[in-house]
Length: 419
Ligand SMILES: [Zn+2]
Image 1 (cartoon, rainbow, N blue to C red):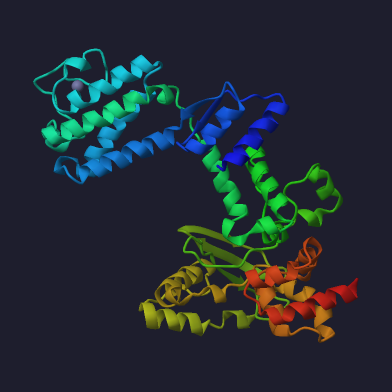
Image 2: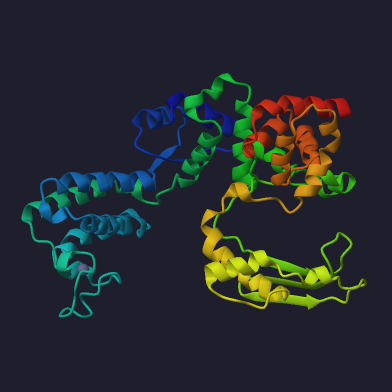
């Protein structure tokens, strides 16, 4: 942090009745020095992450000259020993004592390990093995021992600032939240949205409220608002989701179904209904209100022929459940590999397409686009909602569903005319 900024912040906090006694920070000498000039009683403590990083860097540098330290696992183990020693001590003396155990322990002398529970050497010296050192053996190099001892001495000399270590993890996490909403590379400092971006980050941190992108707001309507439930009761549309694009992701279940009917005319009744999904069967016979037409007994040559041809089987056609079973086998064998997301139709396709009938009559928009929207389960009502949620709402929906953008204008104008 810039020294000026740190000083201003500390003054503001003091004016608000919150005086800073201890600053947990990395070793940024100029900031600490400035703070200590302006405030009498401020003391500086190190931050866990920075201490850990510092030790890790030192170990890495030492490993360049000593092969015994070149394994990641060995360095990680020694780093853990240091951090346990530092975090496990309440006073400077504790930490000093803890740090002095490390080097003898990893080099095989355990006299100082007597009253610690992390070293089991003294309870069972014959079978003792190091879990994290190569072959379970202690380190041996004298030069390395001297280097590690000097690192220990360096840490002991700083024992005052490494007791009672703070953590700046929470700050780092907040920084990360802000940087997602206001990336440095975009220079939002020059834009009036910066205030909102920061507020959104604060809300997310303090209240766990996630502010959606405009685009998501268009899709989901209002999700966070005071007394939202009430306003949804008054205007149920506000709570409606605009359907996301239909996509195959290999997690879907297929339902194969078939009907047997009294005839082939539009006024025929259903006599049997059957469906099959994930090995589960469903079938019902229905008593028809009309007589069964002879035509209905005309064999469905197509499916029977296909089944005979591809599966080499004959089956009891015109029994809905048998039809469905063979349909399932045919699908698995011939069709399953060819199914694409473009083949999907929303269940409410016809209803959605009907919703566009008026604006289709006016010829202001193309039927092809309406079909594409209807396939995705998007009706005129959804487009109106999107437009009411954001001035670019329709554009966002079209983008999401990969519908050509050039129709956005025509749709927007149609909706305006309707109002
Ligand atoms: Zn030991």
